[in-house]
Length: 72
Image 1 (cartoon, rainbow, N blue to C red):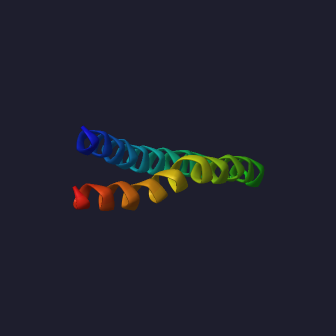
Image 2 (tube, one colour; image 1 turned 120 degrees about the horizontal axis):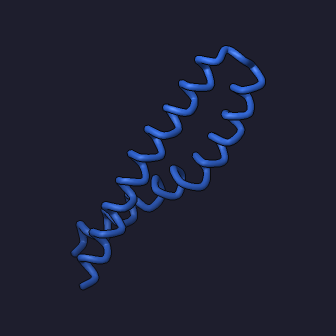
């Protein structure tokens, strides 16, 4: 049972990494296409917060769950 919980967390972490990475890149691309420095700065501010909340959390969780899966 622990194996499947770890595997689930590991897969969710991978999906979060892929999804937030693609989403953040998309929004930054759209902001840069406007050419407005104010828009780019506003989007970058939000991107940094999203990166910290979601991506950093998943980056920390991935090796932990991966190592735990390897030990199972």
